[in-house]
Amino acid sequence: MTEKQTYYGRWFFPTGVSSEDIMQYEGTLKIDEDNHCVLTIQGELRVGGNLLEQIDVSWGIDKRGNKYTLLGLYMSRWNVGDQMEYNAKYIIVGAHINSLDEPFFNECNVKFPYLQNWTEASMIAIPHDYNKGVITIDYNQENVFLQGELDDGIRYKVVDRTVCKLNQLELSAKKATRYDIVSERLLSISEFSNYIQEFAQFLSLALFSKQQPTAITFRKKGEDSVIQMLFVASSSHKPGTTPLIPITTLKERIPIFIKRFHSIYDKIETLTRYLITSLHVGDFDAPIFIIVAQALEGYYQRFLKGTAGVSNKKWEALINRFKDIEAVKNCTMNADLIKDTRDKYSHLYDDEPKEHNIPTGKDLLYLTQKCKILLTCCIMEQIGMTHDEINTSINGSEVRFIEYNVMKYETQKKMKIVYNGNQGKKLRG
Image: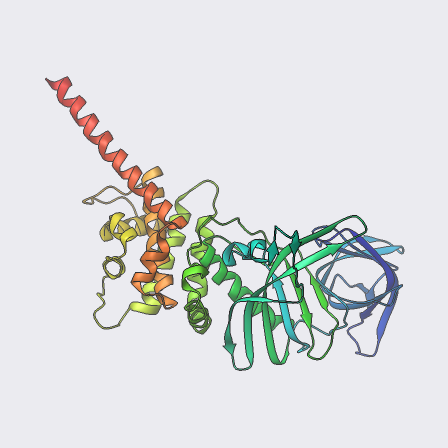
């Protein structure tokens, strides 16, 4: 979150007629604490007599000579003959670029609010000697947790540094963890954004909670200046105490998982997004079950169907594939029940005689929880994790708590059925 700031300067707009025909206006750029951007210009922006309601890109220079690029502008207010107001989706601070698709940078640094929960970065690791009263801080040193290659000439790393703030009366230090992408060739902001969203989704899986970036900066090779991109950040959810894919025990394997995730991203992105979406809902309803069930069906169609030894009965095939996973084994799953429930709520079939009742209410909630566990196993296997690694990773993670709650609910349900049955016997007696 940045401080609220106001910038006065000149703003340049293309007319749509010629790249050399640029309109110039005096105006004010205001950026609030959450990076909402409002540009107010003096005058009217018109082309061919029509107001410019949407603008792809605008350049600006403030009174101090700093450069700005505003992208994705749309008109939010208009006073006739006086001034116009635009909101911008992205602000590039420090450079003039033509579009999100223009190759411009070699390096990208990204901050996530809970990345340190994954790396378990700690200030305790800083060299200190309490007896001598000495703490040694090297704020140039980077601690690399993970690194690897995404594509030819494009590498990533997860690092932290100790950041210090010093004034006349106070010295403070904290760990700053970030995700870096470095490319040998120039990449556009759009290309960097694709890599960022991939990692955001992998991190969401690893922490088993939705994660989104909060700050992004860029650099050009050989240049010291840092170019900042401001945007309204999507919310991230605080993860549980133990990651689903922990760095502490799988540090050597995680780069393999990330590489595999990258190679199949077009196939697995929707499935992972459905899983993460299902973790953060308010009031539960049938559509949440449908989302998870569709993801499981998609997994079967994309990765299992037609492979050797896999049944053509998808729900049986999915359950049997992970029967050696403790969480799946403990949450007894009925393939026919899942299939019929999926058909009922997805296709709105009329009720038909079944060997079992289609679940509603809490029964549907806990069936959905079972399916989440199964979907989690599917994704973990597909990124390259062995079943032993899946079993070990689930222990202590949020998935284990889901499993525990499912088992507790079903035990209580059985006890209630037995109790009600005994009461009936007493009444009849």
